Length: 280
Picture 1 (tube, helix red, strand yellow):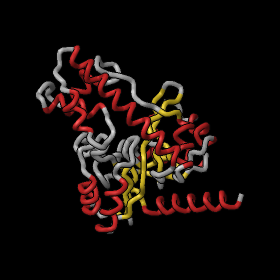
Picture 2 (cartoon, rainbow, N blue to C red; picture 1 turned 180 degrees about the vertical axis):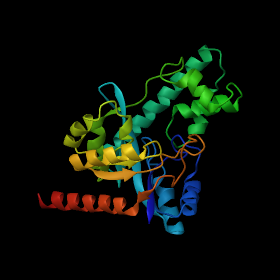
Picture 3 (cartoon, one colour; picture 1 turned 135 degrees about the vertical axis):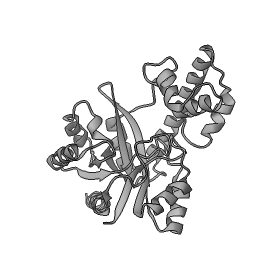
Picture 4 (cartoon, rainbow, N blue to C red; picture 1 turned 120 degrees about the horizontal axis):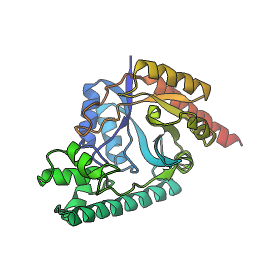
């Protein structure tokens, strides 16, 4: 069976994997196609497109947008997005700036708490990517102020911890709209983590088109339940590893069995949508 992985993160957001390493792992896993879905950034696209041609692995331009709905965190994946779409590009630029300011606030809180964070050195780690809590955790680990990255999150960076500053979040409706304006297909990431799955009906009313069915922590029973839900709301199935390199030890690239047919169905849906838009 030809397989794909449609949920992968790179060092442009909160993974330690370069784009080249991602493609090499994908090649080793014998994947036909991958989507790099970094948080609120499309910085991977140019390099990934080049490597796609060199290694003969199809690349699907992707994004993962952090959202909030009824005070709960929700993540929306976008596939086939055009990074040049004006509103999409503007929204991501604003999100990256807000993320950077958030990281600076957390670093200042760390210094007030007695930790030692050189903010300029910390921001160098972000480079052209998007700032995340992970950058601060890695900094504290590398400067030997915490015993492990996992402990850093537990002690300082989880939502109930002293350094935490609320994240940048779009509304679900806004994220779906931006993805569709950019020519993409919007999919709900890890839906099994939603506190109320009836929310999915509302999301479909806003243009959600797909549901992440295959995921490392979704068991076979839950997968069947989600497939029924996808059928009920006429959503296409997607899936991926949600790989973050060594920063998530429960998953790896190609670690879930996602058939290439599911990607073909996404392509068909996108083609039908463009034909519909052209004829109205």
